[in-house]
Length: 316
Ligand code: SF4
Image (cartoon, rainbow, N blue to C red; front, side, top):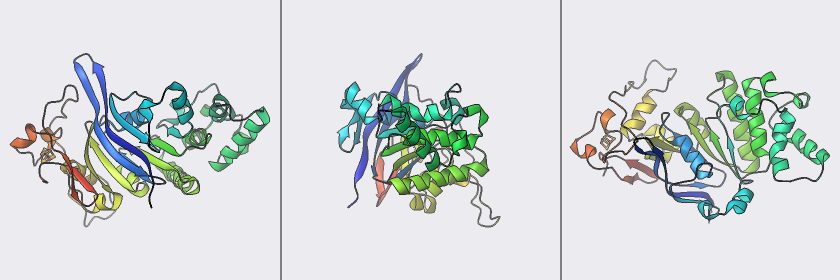
């Protein structure tokens, strides 16, 4: 039987800004089975990265629950959360910005091991660092190199080694290949896939690029201005997208065939403000199918077909 590793219930993260409250994440709910990947997609500003950080409590959630192996992370005290951090890691988008330029590869990867006092001697830490470097495909000769001496792919491999150091069960991959050249992206994606297989890792994979997430995720959650708009298995979502926003995102993916190419749906209209949002569907101002109801009433996130959820008044 499948085992649920992470369950998120009605998670909200609001930020106080000059003109009111910015609803960055507004009622996120989902479950992820152990060893699976949930892809989280949407344009920048849709709340996907904030969601990842709120789940890990890098941003304190405004409300809601995050149950990891049944334990609510929000209820853990500082010390319990510190212990829990071993299980929950993050890989950042820009490996260069997330690595301290004054520290060597070895020092960066050893940081979590030293912080959590995993080993007693320097030799033990060093040998674990070499093991992690080998796992992520970094040559041993780079052990004393600095991040600026390495290319983007190698820098991201350092970020991955650091995330793996404490043997976590769950990793938020926050746009891990967006800053890399296309030729390097596939190598890093393959590495993440292999690690998942070898270590039964569970991922949230955050990206704006649906073609990447199709290859990588078991399920996909589409977000728009802090709200969930559609969720289904990767296969179903690509085969039969339902929400007008998902359809527009999919139509923008470049495909090699000049025949069967779906017509590109260009989104017009202004993006609504996530600050003190008005009632109604947040996508209404850009949606070609919008009707009166869409501007007054928020659509519920409903299971329209088995395991296929949509928030849209077109489906009741
Ligand atoms: Fe478009 Fe209305 Fe559906 Fe929103 S609820 S996506 S505005 S049809």
